[in-house]
View 1 (cartoon, rainbow, N blue to C red):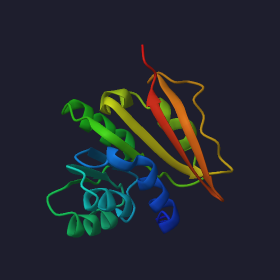
View 2: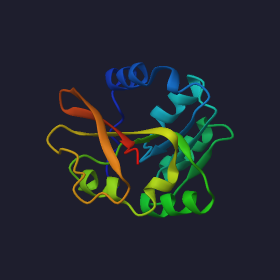
View 3: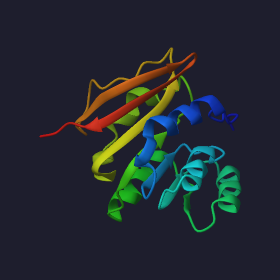
View 4: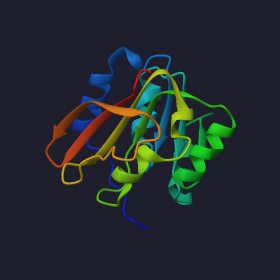
Length: 164
């Protein structure tokens, strides 16, 4: 089992400062939730709901203890995305913090059905290593980079769906 790398307090603070009023009343999705810190902070800041996805069962159980009535899925991210799309669940904010330098920066934006999770005007934020730039080369989900914020080793890349 890989060690969990919790999002630093500085990055969490910056994330919610950038998201601002978008969090209040939002449906929030926390992919690769780890400790659940980001999703729990979204709930604390007024998100209507949060779904946590963490494939490591012991970590998912710890999140369940802290997350009240929130849905916690102990599934691999690809399976979780399919599960959520089949249930017509959409989100206003999708946050993903995959393991650094694991190839997810290339894979995640092109996951089949990912676009089905986006509510109108949704934003997706991917936390990743500054040494592993986000790739949108094969992009069936019509995602575009809105902005990139650099915090030393950590980057937050904000994505939105291209308007058709």
